[in-house]
Image (cartoon, rainbow, N blue to C red):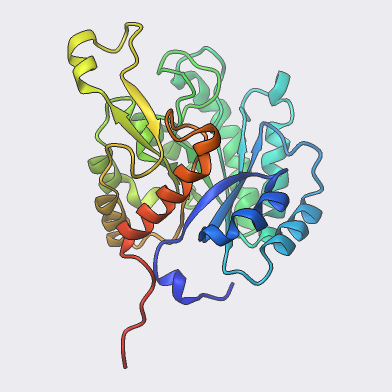
Amino acid sequence: MNRTALDTLIRIGTLLGAAEAPRLLPRIADYGFESIQLTFWQSTGGHDLPELARRVREAIGDRDIRVSALGIFGNPLSGHGGNADTLASWERCIDAAREFGTDLVTGFAGRIVDMPIDASMPRFREVFGELSRRAADRGVRLAFENCDMGGTWERGDWNIAHNPTAWEMMFNAVPADNLGLEWEPCHQMVSLIDPIPQLRRWAPRIFHLHGKDATVAWDIVREKGIHGPAEFAWHRTPGFGDSNWRDILTILRQHHYQGTIDIEGYHDPVYRGELEWTGQVSGLRYLKACRGGDAILNPE
């Protein structure tokens, strides 16, 4: 992969569903997105991945846009119902990643349904021990999204990789250098975790960032707590939430982060529907400003 002046900065992009990407890419490319993550829900869905890679390359054309990662979001530890194909889809994405020009596959770590996180560790060790070896043989890295998907430590349906204590257990269970995190401040903030000290601690393990923020209504937390019917936190597009993205980008650069930040849209309670891409392009410009703007070559 040839590096350009843009690669001296952290690229800012967006997430696109894999099925829609060849159609949408030409429509959004001129907004200034510099990378894309292609996502699949639970299964690669019968896609011919080499053919999809060809169509994505054709849609990008000669623009300086990179495929940052393939994302497969299901429960690879389950194998039941809608997740019956999730594990095989991880394998397909690992095998095809290089055809998309990326070395990164991401998704949920999975979970033994409705059991405490500890109970998932033997199955996690089995599944991702094998997947990490398969990926290493192909020069591919794997990263776990930090979304709780409504789960807690005791119960859940999708993902154990939503808490730093679980991360310690996971990386001890499978001590592979090509396993890391797909992190975003939003999912920690809605658990009332300060993302900044966590980022300083875990930055070396972070392979990819989702550009998603949160707003926490501390007045509601103080008055009504977090177990009542009142909402106390909202997922937000960067620039509309509580995070200081200048600090986030500074910490990433201090730790020599080599990945991208790709905006995860379709969550903001205000910039949604017909305002979706208004919000995303605003977030794109905001994140570019937080990183220092465009790449400027030093004068000779």
